[in-house]
Image (cartoon, rainbow, N blue to C red; front, side, top):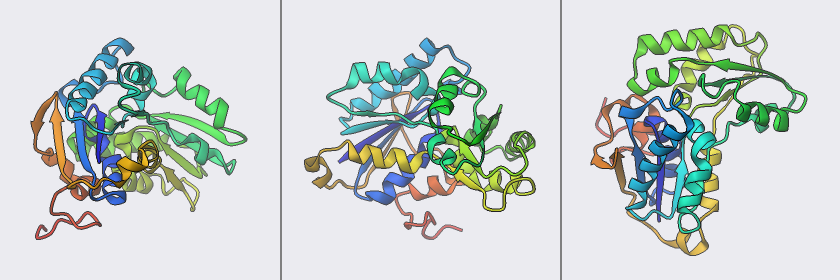
Length: 267
C-alpha cells in the first residue's frame, strides 16, 4: 500500500505522521516544492499549476491514494486535481476542522493564512457548519513560513500577533493551515492567558488520514508495504529536510524512530 501527500512544504508531515502511526507498513510519498512557497499569495491558476506538478510527480510512483495536505491548495486546486487524476487515483482534500470545533457552540477562533482568512470558501464553511458558535477569523501572516524554516524568532512573533487577535474566553481554535499543526504546543501556550481553561485545538491531520484509508479498497488495505518514505522536491528525490526533525511529526517519520517520535540513539 502506497500513500502520497502533497503540499508546498513540510506542512504535509502532520498527516504523514498520523498515517505512519495508523499503518506503519504503508509506503509514503511526500511531494512538495518548498522553493515555490508560500502558495497563498499566488493566483488560483498559478497555485493550481504548482499543486498539479507536485501531484504528477507523486503519481509517477503509482500511489493508491493522494492526499492534498494543504488547505489553500484544497480550496483552489482540488477540483482540477480530481478531474485529472480520478478515478484511477483517489484524491483527498483538507478541510479546516470548523464543524467539530463549533459543535459545542462555544467561542471559536479560526487561525488561517491571510489568503484563506475571510475567503468565500472559509465563510461558506462557517455558514454551513458554524451553528451557534461565536466564530472569529484570525489571519496569521508569516506563520506558515516561520514553521517551514523553524525560525524561532519569526515563529514567536507570528504566534504572538495571532494570539493578540484571539478573543478572551476562546474555547476552540481551528488550525486552518497544515503547517500550524506542527506548532500546536506553542500556540496553546501563547493563548493560555486569555483562552478558556479547557481550550481545544482542532487540526485536520487525523481526519484526513482516516479519510485516505477509507478511500482504499479492502484489497489494497490488505497489502502490506515496507514502511518506506520517499521525499520529492519539485519532482526530485531528496532526503527528508533536516528542518522536519525540529518537530515531533517529522521525527516520527525518520526510519529509526520509535512510535512516539523519539529518535533512537539521538539526544
